[in-house]
Length: 177
Image 1: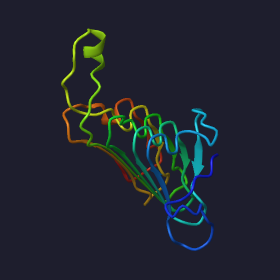
Image 2: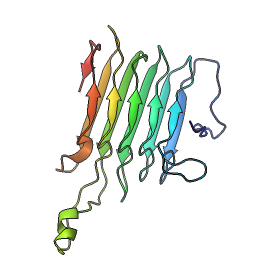
Image 3: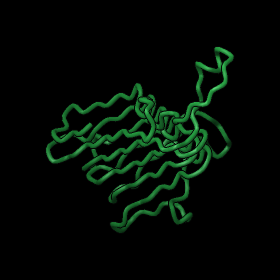
Image 4: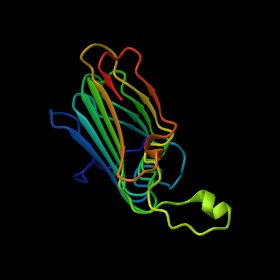
């Protein structure tokens, strides 16, 4: 995987019980490797602590593979908030060993690329956003008292916020989708 700096910019550190916060803010912040490759990147939450990943900015976490820490909470926020959207498209989350997963996918951007209008040589004046979690794959925590919450919301009337998302909630007794 790729070692990105945490929210403090100092890099992740083991030890203590403070949550690890991975800030992926900005265009392709955590979706490309240090050499600029577009191949799938991986992030494993440090063991022994809760983990929060904040994805904001065009394609910031697109294609990122996340493995949540065993026995600890895992929170992922994907907000399509600029002209690129798609912050967590093709995101893969393995939270099978986590104590809980809370994935929030939200569209609040003011730009919508109307592919149909472009293909038909028509201008587009539509407003909306690319689905921040389109094609995401989520594996929920297993076992009792291991909640799995996947929230998809949009401030615009387009249904693509979580289009084609796959959620595996087998073995989870507290899934909320």
